[in-house]
Length: 248
Ligand code: ADP
Image (cartoon, rainbow, N blue to C red; front, side, top):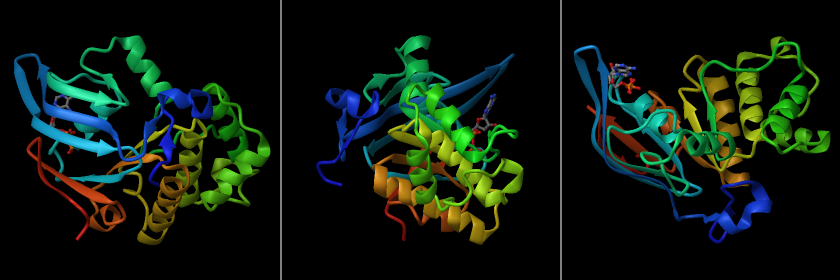
């Protein structure tokens, strides 16, 4: 991985803006996030510091309510910190305007959730082709098939989502998110509803993308077995990082 670069603005066309593997791609400094609803304030993050290097695979753990989703929303640029700095791919998200944050979401960050967002009447390959075109990077069928092969879906390109198992659907959703070739992938409890064998297949697919494309991966999970697949586990409690290191 050393020397491999992770393009942040659009694949090979944007090599000049690439961040070298190993350089920080996510930096959070003393981040505070407070939700305000009517008179009620909830402090979700209280002085969180975290750095993630390009090409790292990091698992975020912590009990329900510890701030994991809030952290992911800040990284995705869908929310701004109440205080502190959140820098993703060189963009200071507390200062960026909506257009800049939306560009970050569209071009540099892929987000995959527990529930998939495949279009039911299109085949897996058509779903991917659509996602790729919407991201402005049309993919031809041979490239689609190659990517499906990496994700263990080589023979599934012509199937519709309802013809796939739960794990295959999750991997197909991953394939669509990855069709935009995002340098950073945010994954929120993507194995939460899967049995352990199927979850293992989805994680193999994530690990393959990490290995082959050098994608930076931030994966939120409750499950220590899932987190153990990452290079590093960051554990949150009450909105702060309480442990940060390689899996045991
Ligand atoms: P986790 O993902 O670890 O379960 P969250 O980031 O969802 O944690 O939540 C952290 C804290 O912020 C919790 O106390 C939660 O109730 C609160 N919270 C999360 N989202 C909102 C919201 N939209 N409005 C008010 N409070 C929220």
